[in-house]
Structures are given as C-alpha cells and as structure tokens.
Image (cartoon, rainbow, N blue to C red; front, side, top):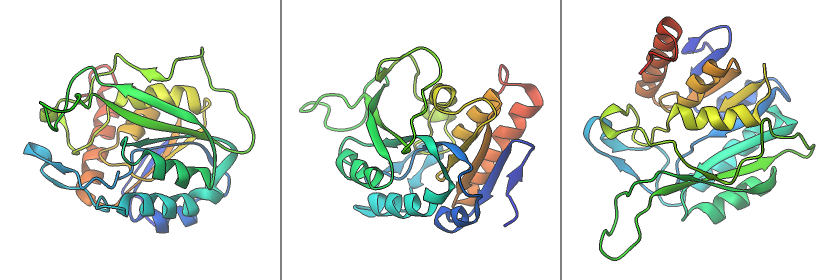
Length: 236
C-alpha cells in the first residue's frame, strides 16, 4: 500500500490497521506505543467535535484484540509495549494484552487538573492509565529507573488539539526514550494526529503509524512536515 506520508524514518498509512499490519516485516518492531479507542463512546467538542471510530461499548477491547493478533508477528521478542486506556477499560485491556505479551504493570499519567464528569459527587478524573507489557525476552528500559506516576506533562489544551484525545508529544517521547532503542522501530496502529510519530522523529527513532480517518492523517502529515521544516523547538 502506498503511504499517506513518508520520510526516511517515518511512514504513515491511511488504512485499517488490522489489514495493514499483516504486511509489515516480521519481528521488525521494537516498541508498540498507541492510544486506542477506549470503548467509552467519547465525543469531542469545539474544533475536535465528533465521535471516535470503534469507540462504542465493548468495541474498544474487541478492536484491541484484533489489532494485537494482526501485530503479533511484527513485534520483536524483546518488544516493549505501552497502551493507553481508561480506568473502566483497564481489566479488559489487560486481559487482551496478556494473551500476547507479558504484563509489567500500569503507569499513571497525572494531568494535574480536573476533567469532565460529576463535579459534585465524584473525584476529579485527573489521570489516565498506560499499560506496560513486554515480549518473552527481557530487555532493560533505557535511562534511570522512573516511578510509575508520570507527572509534569500537561495535556494538550483543547484549543490546540487536532484530535479529540490527542496526547502531548512530550509524553510519547518520554515513553519512547525508555522503551525504544536508538535507531529502533516504533509502531502506532492508532496514530490519530501523529503525536507518537512526531515524538519518534524528534528522538531519531524509526516509526510506522496507521490511521483510519484521512482528516487525522492530514493533520499528522502537517505536524511532521512542520517539525522537519522548522525544528522541534519551534513546531507547534
């Protein structure tokens, strides 16, 4: 399949990842980093208004299981995998991952700010979960050992998002810098507006992203090209 966007290190496809992943080289992926649909029927507003594909009740975990099955042959035996999820989808996502990889635990991205929901009768949902798994072969994480609570990285402000659940590049870069070796390959089957790909480009890692919706592929391509043109210190 012809890429939607491609450079020497980053390739983005506009496709259903369950089909595209079957064509990737065997055991070529050092790190799986992705933010799949949580199955929470999330709806954005403002500039990112609209729903997320395959995010209906129970659709998220079914999609994740199918993607992991398709991606399995592409993962190296010592792969590190980071998969974002919601607290309510944590058990199902853990079960899905454990059928293919070894669970190493969960990380908490602390956003240091509240969120939507019942403001009077519940605690503020100021965090998201990241499941960490590995392949059958052990490979140490890079850098100094870090705690499981990831703080100090703010969410992307709503007015700056090009995707309803866009993750900050700094957060993706933090995970990549520890889970993907220099010159290694990262795979993001749910690339969205390209945060994982931009992070990989900044760090000099190779990356393959797959995104089903063309509008988000276009947003990701614009971000990647802008960063190539002006450099990470000036890119938005």
